[in-house]
Each structure stands twice: as structure tokens, then as C-alpha cells.
Image (cartoon, rainbow, N blue to C red; front, side, top):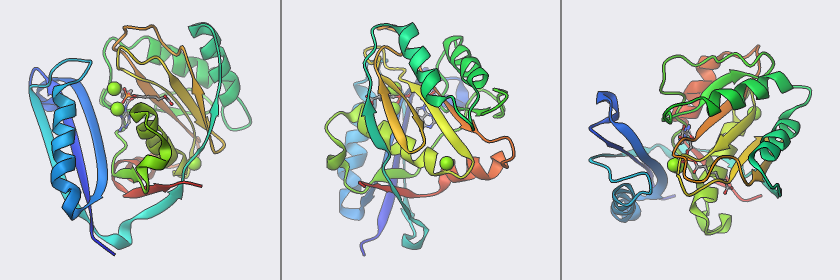
Length: 243
Ligand code: WAQ
Ligand code: MG
Ligand code: MG
Ligand code: MG
């Protein structure tokens, strides 16, 4: 089997992220050697033409993934929902997540934490699924990385959705993660989702059109060691397969 490479891009405005730059865009793929150059180029283009603004810092990292390290997982099943307002969407998101392993109160806390952000984080908040207490430290959040889909085209032409489905599938594959809540930081994109029980629930109207504040919350079981979950999410190479 051909060797695979992880190609990752992160871009910011006002300098690098680690020097206080404002996050513009991040994306990544897992591809064969002969695709590395063209993918790196398309990721750079994307950072330079983003609805959140033009990046003045772009970092592209490429590294070889040892084939035996790759884990193959199934893609979440997609369900579409219709709503007519933000409050209705947030209500539905809460009902979909609420159950034996996720508490309604935890979802309410998560939604209000996302709504009260004054700038987007690069990663996701890790939140206790029962108490709603935030477990990650610092402001960066947990950044899921090293994932792609085995057959990207099979997941459709909506790039937001395709990437979100890959990310959400990896996140749900983590032992101890029981749910996710997300809406985009792209000002022109108001569709978000919740993921739980093997399903990716697409929800319109998750935020105000024009807002550049988005975010993610990963709900984790109380009795799980969050460090090992974070290591898996940040660095274990995963390819998502169509079911
Ligand atoms: N790991 C963890 N959190 C992330 C990551 C990542 N790799 N990438 C983004 N985030 C967080 C970060 O706080 C962003 O501000 C927020 O999520 C939103 O990221 O089916 O486009 O990339 O059509 O703007 C949902 C698609 C699109 C719904 C979500 O998110 C659909 C989207 P964005
Ligand atoms: Mg994105
Ligand atoms: Mg899980
Ligand atoms: Mg975005």
C-alpha cells in the first residue's frame, strides 16, 4: 500500500497564533505522496481567500504516517432537520443530545458558553456530559487533527459538511466522548450540527448570519481520563469510511 502523508494548514491574521494572531482558517488532508504538492497548494489558496479575512501567517506541515498507525472508522449517519429560528434550533439540539449519558443542564451550559465567546477558539471545549463543567484548560481548546475520509467525494460537495462529518466521526469514535455540539465561525455559514449515538444531526439556524464566532463542544463521560482522549483526538491518524 502507498505511503500516506498528513498535510495540515493553519492560518492567522496579525501574526502567528502563538503570537496572538487571530485564527482565520485550518484544514487538513491525508493523501498519497504524489498529491502532497497539489493539496498543500490548495490549502494555502484557501487560507488566502477566506470569508473571515486574508491570512498573513500560513503554516503548512507535512509528515509521513506509518501505515500501521492508521485507524479506519465508519462515517456517522446523517439526519437533516428543519427549524425556523435560532432558539428552536438550540432547543432541538438540546433534545437530541439529552439522554442517559448527556444531561440537559450540561447542554444548556455548553450552549451558553459558546454564545458568550467574544472570539472564536481554535479548538473545542471539553465538557463533562453530566455536570457541564469545562475540563480543558487554557483558551485554545482541543484541536482535532490527523483525519480525512477514505473517499472524500462520497461525502458530497459541501466542503463545510464534508469536513465536519469527518471531524465529528473521529470525535465520536473516541472512547468516552458521547456527544458534540457545533456551529461554524464562518460569517456566511449558519448550519451547525449535533452528533451523538452514531448520528450527525444537521441543524439550520444555529447562529446569527454575519457572525464570525463559532465553536465546538465535546461532551465527555465523567469517569474517563481526559488526557488520553485528547491525545487520541489531536494525534491519532484516522481515515473515515463510508458505511
Ligand atoms: N478541532 C476542534 N475544534 C475545531 C476544529 C478542530 N480541528 N476546527 C474548528 N474547530 C472549532 C473552532 O472553535 C471553530 O471556531 C469552530 O469549531 C467552527 O469551525 O453539515 O465550518 O471550521 O453543513 O468554522 C458545520 C457543518 C460546519 C454543518 C462547521 O466549523 C453542515 C464549520 P468551522
Ligand atoms: Mg473548518
Ligand atoms: Mg465515543
Ligand atoms: Mg471556519
